[in-house]
Amino acid sequence: MARKLTGRQDEILRFISSFYAENNICPTLHEIASFFSISDAGAWYHVDALEKKGLIASSRNTARGIRLKEWNEYSPGITIIPLYEEERWLAGDKSVKKDFNATGLQLEKKTSYFALRMTSSSLINIHIIPGDILVFRKCSHAADNDIVIAKTEGSAVCQIRSFHKTKNKIILQAECDSIGNISCQSCEIQAILQTVVRRYE
Image (cartoon, rainbow, N blue to C red; front, top):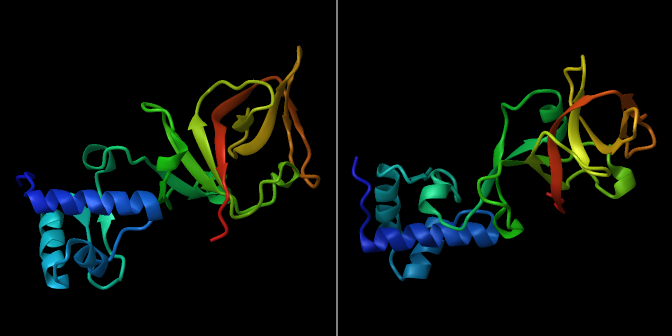
């Protein structure tokens, strides 16, 4: 199906993108209608056209049922990364994810990122608490004191630890008093902590 947009469709698509970037949610049909001084039915007409062109998904059964589908191509300047629940992801379950709006974090282009919402207190000693969102950069190498996601040889479970390398071994330091450190000769680094976003949702 052709994707060429009318002028008003392009304006509405950009409005939805900008609204999401500022609020981390998409606008309602009524908010679109109010912004463009058109009726709710008129807003729905344009949203329906954008959906038919494959640029958004929408549900009329929920107030905020609009979702942008192709961020990189049609929403320049907006960075969306996958968000997972910490303990499920570390255990290998990556089936449940949400979109996380990382636009304001100025992440590097052509670099792969993902986010974990902390559900445990495993990083409490460095003041990272349940509810915080950790943005990780996928990387296989780490420097001293980096917070990493790592997997030791023979283990199927990943760990979030502070990385320290001595002459003879690697220490994956726990940041919680109830968890012990891991000492090993080698480990598989999967990602490095880029930034922490405070969330209490």
